Length: 116
Image (tube, rainbow, N blue to C red; front, side, top):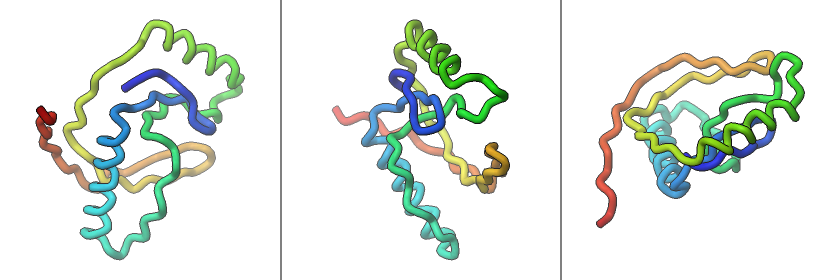
């Protein structure tokens, strides 16, 4: 993960390296399409890889206050490493400005050694 930043309607953590995350996403989308051809997978949104940490639909908290809190966190948290050890296929639903999901399947991921 890299610095904190915003995506439309959310505050998020940027994820790096971008290419590797995009490759993982495409591999998982292809596997899903092959395993479940009846599903109509829409085109991915053009947002860069990220981890959303807050949405702009919260209980009357001004967006400015949320952004200031993220800025304060950004002053102390610079970088963190995260290992992706499994992928989850989920049924994602958005209702009344809130997301919920149900795990359908878990796929363990094997680490790939870095190029030397």
